[in-house]
Structures are given as structure tokens and as C-alpha cells.
Length: 470
Image (cartoon, rainbow, N blue to C red):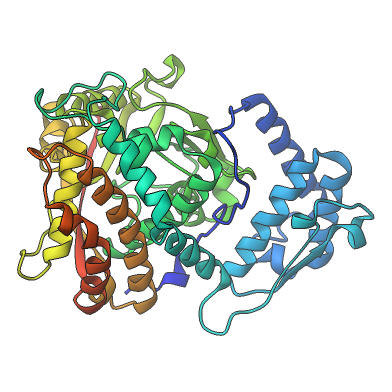
């Protein structure tokens, strides 16, 4: 069984800033900041000093202070602030102490929130996990007034399409507007603000660890080798904060990192990490928009995990897959990770988990999204002419079903966040398409928490991959 801390990569999840609107992504500015950060790292840490010590930022204080002070003197203030916060989080995730006082070490004064950050070793659970948990719990237990406004707004816009032109699955299904009430739908992602992003990265991190655990540690299902001298170019679509890319990169010997390039795309640049990782770049890109011409036949592997539904209808999802196959080099691999959105256990065994999936399906269909395409995706790759097409099913264990108590408990909180959003969205639907009675929707989240704690559940995943002919 994969233990939580064996694969923990909790970065960029504790952001505390609250923005009025999602900031415009300034690629030139971010590149400038990234180059300044990387330049200071190269100037401050002797070559190879971090190769055999992944926790060098926590353990090698002398070089770390030189790195931070270099940024303080040569980079924009935001570069140092972001880096200090990021390293603080990473050391906490490793249960290691972290203390840095910019005024004392570098003779400068930053904002109070970032000038001095410290951590202490946790006795049972890391502080980073506690932050994730508290963020998710706060999201689940928001005050009643906010919830009332949320529901009313969704009701008021029940006839409004949310997909910007996506074809509805059925023409007579009333539309709702996810941005006003349905957490984690495509429009929610496109409009998410900084506070929302920090909360969702915690959930996505837990789900990533759960998917990895369910697949017994496998992240790359295609038989693609990173050994040898052949450089690989990898595209991760719907990357969020890039955790999948960073986890894959960490499995490659550090001496070979420079050979391989990773590109992550997402509809909302607010998810992108504030500090660059060498070999990884981020591009703001909507899955429904044509990719840059320069990308065609340029990637050795493309990863599409839990993102295709954002394309809309089943035909639109299939079209996106075909378009991304065109981005593969001859002999390149595409892999898809998606879920059936149907509870794999009976209603008698998991009545609440079944009801959660019923809400997900109803809200997705009302939003013009087809939630039941996963079983067809293998045939899409076959029909597209790919070779060596394979499929593997896996089940993310939630709550009592998980032998890792810690990850099982966190999975409960992550799934309750999803259940809360979709229960509210389902309540906003017209009576003819509402999956459950309002009374049931009102208590679903609290009933589900009991069920997952006492019984547990399985979240069904499919991983499909195939190779483009040479």
C-alpha cells in the first residue's frame, strides 16, 4: 500500500491572498521572475548539492539564505515572498523545521506575512496536511447565509447556459450557471479566484495521491522510457498546479531532468505555481481552443486526466482527443484518466455515494456536459488508428475503505467538498430533472460524511492509453 508521505508533493497549496477577480496572467513577467529565481538558485547552491538531498532547502541553511538574499537584492519582491512561502510549505510536508527571517538574514524588511516564517516538526500529521484539512473543512462548513445566497443565485439563473456554446446533452434540460453555485465545473475553473484556487489545489492534491495509490504508484501507464539519452517532451492537459508533472519528474534521476521537458496547460493561470521548476513550463490554454500550431507532432506523451468533460458533449470530448493525437510525434503515446461517474457499489451498500454521483450526472447534463463517456474512450483511440491500445480500471479508496487511515480521512474531506457543490447545483435544477428531493439534498453532505467514515466507498477510474503509429 502506498503511504501518503511516500508520494507527498504539497506545493503551492497554502496561498492566503484573496483577490477580487482572477488576475490576468502576464507570461512575460512570470518568465522574468522565474529566470531571476532560477539564476539565484544556481548562484547560491553548489552544483549537485541538492541531487542527493531533496530536502536541501530545509537542511542547508547557509546556501538557502544566500539564495533568498540573492532574490531579495536582485528580483521583484514577489519572487522572494513566493519562494519563502513555497519552501515553508515543502519543509512542513517533510516534517522538517523551517525558519527564515528576511530582515535578519538579508537586512531587508518584507510584508509581515512573509518576512519571518517558521515551522516545527509535527508529532502525528504534518502541518501542511492540517492546512489542507482546515481549508477543505472551512469550505464544507460555510455559513448558512452564504449558502442561502449561493442557492438563490443558482435558482435565479436556472435557464442560463454555462458552457459558452457547448451543445446540451438534451435540449429540454434546464440550464444552470455553475460559476454561481457548482464547484469544480469547467466554468468554475475558468472564473476561480485566488482563494478558490488554494482550496481546490488541496482537494486536487488529495485526489492525485488517491489515484496514484489506486494504480499502485503508476503515473505513466504508457511504456515510455525516460532512461537513455533520448529527450522526452510531455504535455499535461488540465494541469492545475502541475502536481502530476512534478511527481513524474521526481521519479526520473535528477541528473536527467534537463533532458526532458514538461508543458502543463490550464484554463486558469491562477493555478500555476508561483515558483518555477526547471524543465516545467505552464501555458494558459482552454481545452476547447485549437492548440498552437508549433505543438503539432511535437510531444512524446500527452496526459489527459479528469479533464475531457470540460469539452462538453460526447462528440466534443472525442474531437478533443483526436485533436491532441495530432500533437503526438509518430510513435508517441496518449493516456486518458477518467471516471465512470457511476457508483461501483450498490445503493444498499452506499446510498449516499450513489446519490452524490446522481447529483454529479444531473448537474453535468444540465450544463451541457456528458458525464458518461469514459467507457467509450478506449474505442475512440482504436477508431483513431492508435496501436497497442489498453485500458486499466482502478478504484480510489475513500474513508474506511482505505487501508491508509490518513489518506482515507483526507479523501472524505475532499469528496465532501465535491458533494457540497453538486448537491447545491442539483437543488437549483427544475423539478423535472432534479435527481433527489430537496429534503434529501439538504442532508446529503452530512449523511455522506457518516457513510464514508463508517463504511467507506470506492471512486471508479479508468486509464486508457495508445500509441500513434510510426
